Amino acid sequence: MQSNLSFPKGFLWGGAAAANQFEGAYNEDGKGLSIQDIMPHGVVGAPTVAPTLDNLKLVGIDFYHRYQEDIALFAEMGFKIFRTSIAWSRIYPNGDDAEPNEAGLQFYDDMIDALAKQGIQVMLTLSHYETPLNLAQKYNGWTDRRLIALFERYVRTVFNRYKGKVQYYLTFNEINSIFHFPLMSAGILTPLADLSKQDLYQAIHHELVASALAVKLCHEIDPQAQIGNMILGLPSYPLTSNPDDVIAAMLKDRESLLFADVQVRGHYPAYAARFLREENVQLEIAPDDEAILRNTVDFVSFSYYMSACESKSGGEEAVGNLLLGKKNPYLKASEWGWQIDPQGLRYILNYFYDRYQKPLFIVENGLGAIDQLVDDGQGGKTVADDYRIDYMNDHLVQVAEAIADGVDLLGYTSWGCIDMVSASTAEMKKRYGFIYVDRNNDGSGTLDRYKKKSFDWYKAVIASNGQSLKD
Ligand code: BGP
Image (cartoon, rainbow, N blue to C red; front, side, top):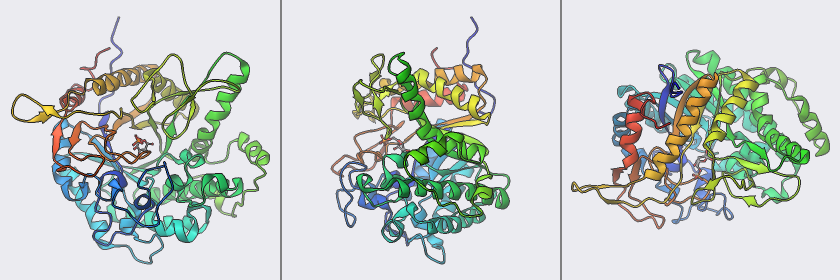
């Protein structure tokens, strides 16, 4: 039988990160605070009033000062593309400033130039869980329509500044996570339990309009760049063949598809009217909004870590990547309880491609695990992360299957290609990288970098364009 391990020529292999999780330098060179600076425990626990020393994100892995060294390591692995985000609060420290912060703009200029020098293309997320803190405190984040104009000002500055130098943009990271984590996702300080459905859906509408405006501006200002949406991809399987469970899975998926449907098709899907009616929400839609929403994305991007089951009744709750569901008795889970399902990636790639017929991009995937730094026998140190290699190999084999199925896939950026602070639990112990960073949960460590076993493994995958994977 012929192998299905065939990736298209020019497939964009790479890695992904987010400013708030790895840059550090949280108050340097004019940067303002972001919501992450008051979330020392991620989505667990209440936010603090001001930054506290136990918040690992304030230092991150100090990418801000070490980006040259890190980018050289990415180049050594053969990365074709690197995805990171721009911290809005580096460019507009308070989010509503009249003028941008030149030092912040300069940092990303330097970073982008360093990537270009190594022949690595750039993908920038415009908003990755790092709303400027002032916008949360003064406006309650995206519940306030004024954020659309403030975001427009910010992205216009970004597109004008980096015009011709950035190949791919994403608008909002995992935009569908707002349903569960309104602070991290949308800068909304009202606790979820007290947030009215009216405010929640209004915030969603504002983000969707802002996302479409970013698409419009990107096309006008920097037409050679492509811009996509980004959703948290977590397919729901019916827990049993009971039709009640099938409908429960369909409804659960719509919580995510709602966003992509608007961003890809340019209007709200038919089923949205029922959502809103049943939640007693009367969306305030400004006269131009519908026309703005018609600015649709060039490609569809998503994160994928796991799948979950849905059931109308019964089933054990699973833990997982921000969106939850029920445990699947057929799957094993990671040390953090995330259910490992490589075939779910093939499934979701086909699902999205069938639904949208737009090029897709996997912009996050990987295994968060506890790593042990050990002697490599040659005077250095390494991590024997065979579990990570197995996880990634199995997922990439399913990616190849999806490509064989006919899916048009632009690339794959593995999450946390260098260890960084985790998003949901804000810890260092949960590591995803090919590169180990010496920093611990208590903040100790030299910040030195070490290549894990997976470093050479990924390098071989990229060099062979997937041929080195084990079917
Ligand atoms: C996604 C986020 C990332 C990221 C990743 C892994 O939800 O977009 O920012 O960190 O998941 O999650 P965690 O870091 O919580 O393990």
